[in-house]
Length: 401
Image (cartoon, rainbow, N blue to C red; front, side, top):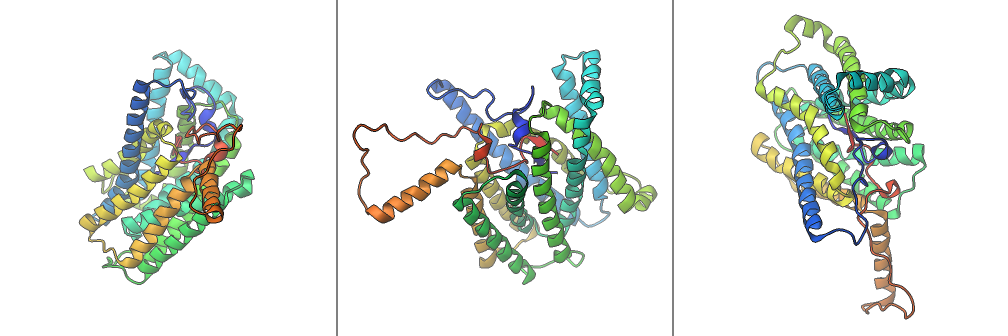
């Protein structure tokens, strides 16, 4: 449902990978026209990220709370995997210029001959399939705005797993932002437990909270594991998503048979499907692929800003569509989460600059800093995103699942 391999290491590996550094120009070589074009692409990227983040959650909530027959969430997960895999297959076919023989030889080499790399994707695919099903459970039992805020715990889990599994280090500002994030989510959940607004009888906030926490844990672990096992891999973004789709379809069908096999056999695979449900499936299948294309134009701050805007958009839409009530406690918690997401998304160089500026202001008072004679000016902060050591968001943006 969500994008799954993000700015991670796989982005820069191999032809066709959506690499943040791909096509980047050296400082001082960008013309005015190119700068304006890149700026427009950044704004388009922001709009796509915001709309995709908010629309999928809102549409799932809408379809899962409509009166009448409810579709099987497991079938929607399988259909999204099938459509995503077919789309990636068509894109690979286009990359081979419509040559079926070249495509077959390429897939035979990449999938069968290099079977070890293919099998490595079984574990993250299993976890992502579980995560997609858990998100349906969570959104079915929590208001869309509450889910959107709580789901930002994936930043916390991804950060913790990256420290434990990849030996990454976080800045003090990032640790502080993670604490703010946890506090904000706790406040929102306290508001939800206190009965924030009317609640349908068939919804269980406890089950929704458990599902979203499990989804965040699986998202964090799978993203970091995905980055760890594929570091240095040469597969393109479309090949990796095709391999994930193959495993995801098989595992999704197994989960469908185990959880709802009898009911699906009795009522049919597409029971309860409406145009709105098909919209959810298409959004889930193609929305992430679209994000994978545009995310290379979005730096960390833009991605954090997109997440914050999607929280606001989900809240506003929930008020109008579902009668969601925003009280001061929810506003406080959501505000803490939005602030934490922004602070965490700051590049490490910018975080150090903020810390040093605040230290300088507290020790020297309101005076103007002058550069000592004979010393070069300090380097300017760059928004270049090729260095993964400054990338706070781990998988969830370059590969999609």
